[in-house]
Length: 139
Figure 1 (cartoon, rainbow, N blue to C red):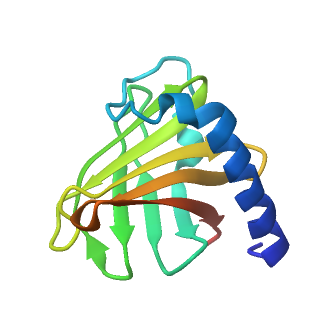
Figure 2: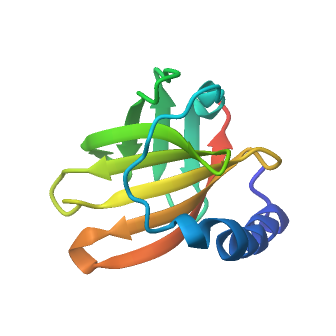
């Protein structure tokens, strides 16, 4: 359910999440595989709340390997993708290598309670970072 109330709650959560949990670890760009995490929980399709951006996560392995497809709305080439944990939070890192996306990345964290991915999109060509929220897309 993509209600405005849910998006507002997630946005407020995101600010607190960033200030108290993620801020000390944001400098870490290299994911390291973690053990005993159920990475499979983030398999599926995820729709960004501010547009037609779609991430499809599949073939999730316990060693952090994952297959990620990205659409905006056309397919964008994913150069690298990995799953790890930071402070016991599942993290999905995606790096692009496509025209207009060279070096751009997503750093997303799985929020269990809302079944959402929250994090950052670094738009390399413009050298800007944006806070983003993805909600699971059913179907």
